[in-house]
Length: 164
Image (cartoon, rainbow, N blue to C red):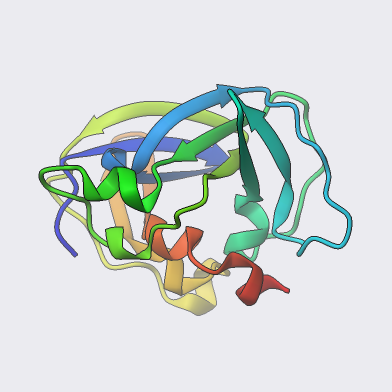
């Protein structure tokens, strides 16, 4: 994996995560979600975004965490489509996994933008973390604690198939 130049941090269930900022299109505050009957559990709903339909995925469910009750103060991180990533001079790692559809992740909070990490540690053993290890790129040590770096391409790719 090529090292990201900057990271966007975000939180769910008290845990901090990060992804390569090049993947991020925008962040929505308290998006209006429309539930979809018979959708896979990972799909929280649809969002109408300036004439486009965005599929909002539940990060907790995608990572294998127990779903929580909606706090009403959620954020949706909207990710670039495959065609948007292809137009970048230096696309991020796993850009080939991007979807042509507009996708977003529902999270509890969005944190800071961090500079390129000096150190990325190996992820913890799967038995300790309880997370889907296909989605974890490593761990970034910070003075405030550890931040789990996600393979955002893996998180977004084929979520319905892995969580149906």
